[in-house]
Length: 263
Image (tube, rainbow, N blue to C red; front, side, top):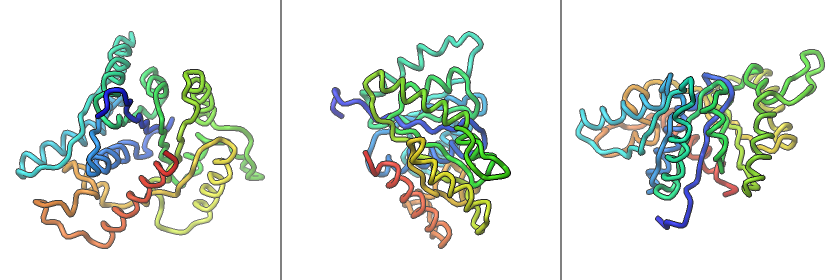
């Protein structure tokens, strides 16, 4: 890698838990590694540690089954009362930025200093969101009677401040992608409402929206083995992909293509 070329920083974030940030982080890391990029992941949600467990399960699975699958460089941090690890994390990101092609940072679901630290760096910000009015509220408050947008949600307001800070550092463009995740397979008025609002809000708040990933059992089944839908046809797994698994793989590849379409 060119020592003068900085790595691409990808932050997976939503100021809400349970949106599937760790699943997307791991799948994105694996996707990029299969394309021969060197990837590091930083788990800043160390108290829960979902991404770190995912990486650990993957190492254990490979060792137990005597197979080789791509595994990212991995780091984990928990919040400290005195914020003493802030400088260490900043130094790590600076160091990794000249050693790998991309750094993927998985953030906590609530705002703390680690959450805020991650948002100092992104070139690309991916916000997973379900087809739920509860999830929509982090982007915009909606009048329940008229269905009109009342004001920006707390997370959208925060990202507006992030954009201003990045611009002050000379980073004039943030590739912010809001990605549907855990989306119901059923057609519903609620889903149409949420995704319709997100399409409209994308122009107002400066993000790109993709309906993204359906709520598939395969993601839950693969987690404890540290696998992704991108691994299933690899040598040594002896796994013939079902139509549903193949659809999930195509779906995720399409999401990645959308994320980097403007980069």
